[in-house]
Length: 380
Image 1 (spheres, helix red, strand yellow):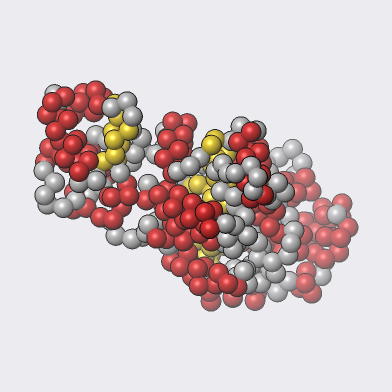
Image 2 (tube, rainbow, N blue to C red):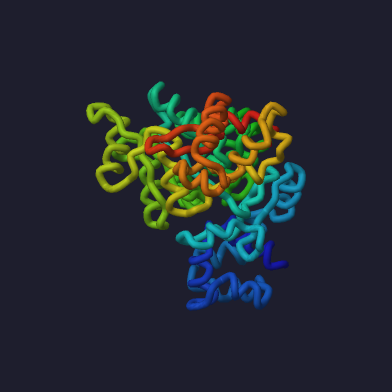
């Protein structure tokens, strides 16, 4: 049996993560390095796992509990890729979280290299205001080039996915069940849209049921794939707060939408702000914070084909756009980059503002308006 197949069996039978397997197989050594040096041998693995009697017993008779051939056949039939922790295609950000999954099941053509992800999570039983905010903020984040990540749950999660899709952006749904067992069933059609514009992913075997303990576990993947986590609405005890705590533990930014302190759905989000989360009312709050911290949201128009602009955009206007990005820049900086005097530049900027290609910010600063320009690009 190949190393990849052994990992599939271990993942299915024991629900093991990388740290679990490191402690059992190679204490003090990175599992990735261990696997890249030598292939796994099932008999050797079984012998070493005697320290875990329950798993050892199941592994001895793994065929009684897990049909490996059927699993691989069904994945092939449904177009599901399996990413193994020792492969380059495995999301590298996940290697830095607690107990990364040994394998990931992925449905969709999405690749995880250079992922600019933002998690948007919140209550299943949310308010109309919460739904609206989740949809709008996610649409704006997707328009700015970020991938919206959530958990496909009813309420805030579903609206986050829908918002990203409405902007022709990319979105990832991390499931607490197997990919052949979409949950909740009410979001089955939504999951099909997500598959076409991003990915459905799960660490659970393809037919795994949506067991209650799966959902807190999958939250570490939602936060792990993201640069930050936005909580839109949450009660005092909420799974969304688990995701936010995981993000903070992973060194990620936590954003939270404030609310009426008398409303139960605002108690969790207000508590996050009290404890240091960034107060957030719009996508710009997140984009400005992340661009400042990570320097990864600079997406100049020079990277977009000139065919994306109508013919009535002049050469001077295109040149100014090429020197701007989503993070607002002072007029003096744009002038210096364009080698253009302030008077001439101000006239061009006013024209671009009227055409809705740019936005004006306090302090005589200007930034790209991706809500306008994203409509010029073909949906992914």
